[in-house]
Length: 112
Image 1 (cartoon, rainbow, N blue to C red):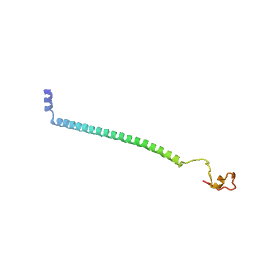
Image 2: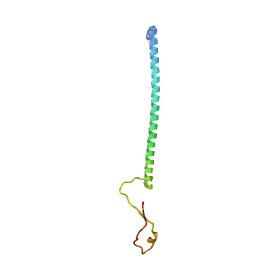
Image 3: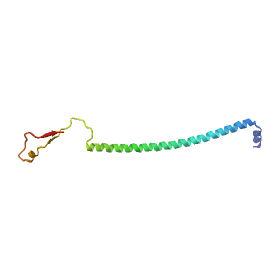
Image 4: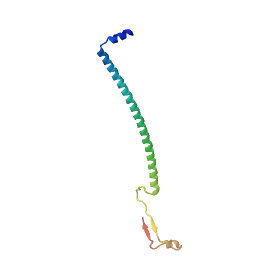
């Protein structure tokens, strides 16, 4: 080991300076790499949290949309297609009360 130390001490000072510079550069790059890895891990955790929040929000939106559709159906606000139906309202209540009145000559009718 002492022979190796002696050889290194006799080496060109410029070679030693270059080696120290290379070592310093490698150490700096290793530190930067560790910092980048920490940053990547933090961003992955943040991304996972956002994805979880989005998924729970989508589930909530689907639930609310289902409730809204149900409420529209109950309230009659839904779109319908087809021939439809006609409803006649008769305001002639006297004719309805009379047991003899089976037919009416001219009923009062409204359509809606």
